[in-house]
Image (cartoon, rainbow, N blue to C red; front, side, top):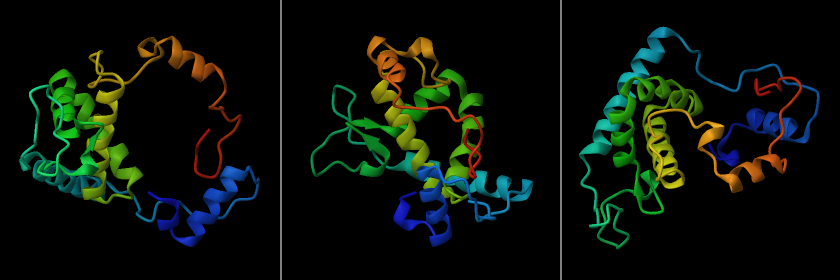
Length: 173
């Protein structure tokens, strides 16, 4: 979610976390209380949203890439650099459908259990994964260090990412 779209208390906590402030605000970042009934309901709604996306007619070129012309019917929010997230999702399902199913809850949580937004995020994720790792068959599994090339490993070692010694207010660490 974009920072400016967050409620003010959430936005302030994100800024505090990014700045490394030790103080915390006593609230949860999620506005939904996660219950088994809520999870089941939203998973069903997310599956419906994914099915709606799948019904849309993709504009595919002979190369297998999404057409970029104005007549393309693929929504820009589910494709990336010519890769259609729906096709990438189908490939991932062929590789390991149970792994894909287990990922859905993470997308729901990241979108505060808004099923349509979670479905869109999931499709963009698989489009990104296909775009980044198109030469490897890893759509239906986690990315591991072995999947990274020398440039990727060099970037990782350069320290663009840091591991915290403890969890922050959002539970990252």
